[in-house]
Structures are given as structure tokens and as C-alpha cells.
Picture 1 (tube, rainbow, N blue to C red):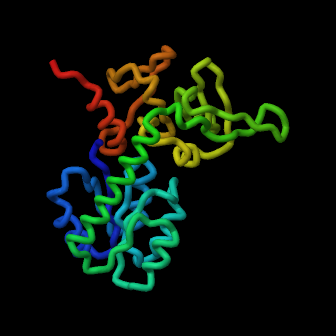
Picture 2: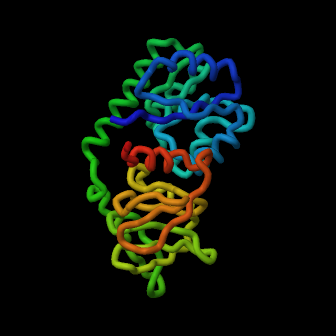
Length: 246
């Protein structure tokens, strides 16, 4: 299984440094960023999907439960840690992967990370093809009060065009949606859909290549623009994994 990516969010840098020190020798987890400001963390997650979060419960301007509700995927796998024992029950009731008490011990953190890894391994084994994701979501149209069902395996790419979300299907059909791009991304499985540019994401099953800062697709002559490597890290990791050495 690939390395799991995570971020740490805590308003105390010392607590972050402690977690970083405990995880530095773990080869199946990569901490890609840390934040003492939850607003910066939220902005990062919106354009750089991660597999899970290590999250302090009490922060300067919010708490972990309110923070999670503001994310594109409020149910993102999360390990909570806190100095207040009363939050344990709330964490488990809300299906957190684990709830750790500060100061976090190495043995408890390792157990939580192994549980996270096991959960992802089981999910990958049970759902290792896009065909298992039978549906995407319902969108309005074409008749009043009507709905159209979009199948994920037929979705080539989605983009914001002219103030609307346009869903491009494998048969050339284009569907319009009034939902936000962020809402669309919250519905897409990150293993199969990569955001390469502001308000553009594509299905990796239709990926043909990357050339001159453009994504080439297998079912259309249209190419998709790409953004900076510092912003779309998940996309560039995907590209690098598909490059052949000379």
C-alpha cells in the first residue's frame, strides 16, 4: 500500500514537534504539513487532499468538531488528541479513528497509526476499482425538478466554466450543475480523481500523459492546464508515479 499522507493541526507548536518526533521513523505515514492556524489548514486541505488528520480538540478560535464540519469532507479519517479527558467519549461517538490524551505516548500513537493503516488497507482491498463507485451524485435537469445520475466511471473531468460546473462524460455529453466545485470534490474518491488546476479535476482512468504543463486525456483532444507543484502536490505525485525512467 502507498504511504498515507497526513497533516497535524494544533495551536501549540511544541505539541506538533512532539508528534513529528514520534512519527519521523514511520515509513507508511508522511506528514506533509503542520498548522497552528486552523484557517490555513482548511485552505491547504481544499486544494491538497490528504488521507487523514491528526487534530487537537481545543484550538484558539474553534474546536475539532466544528472545524471538521467546515471541510470538503467532514468525515475525513481523524486522530484526535487532547489534554481533556471529557472529549474521549465525543470523539468515539463521532467515529474518530482514535482519541489520544496529551502528552501523547509513543505506544498509543503507534497503535492509532496502525489502526489508520489497517482501515485504509481494508478499504483499498474492498474497493480497488472505480467500478465499485457506481454513482457520483444527482444533479438538476434537464426538466424542472428532474435529476440526472452521473456514474463516476463515465466522468472524464469536471471544470468550472462560465460560472457553472460542467461535467464532461466519456460519451462527449456535458452536464451542468449548480453546486460548487468544492462540493463536487467532496464527492469524488481522491484515489481516482486528481485536481490539477483551480476548479479542474480529472479521472485518472482517462489520463494519457503530461506534457508542457498540460494533462493529456485518452478520450478527447482537449488538454487540461496544470497549476504549481507547491499547490497541487497530489496531482504531481500521481504524475511522477507514472513517469518511466530512461
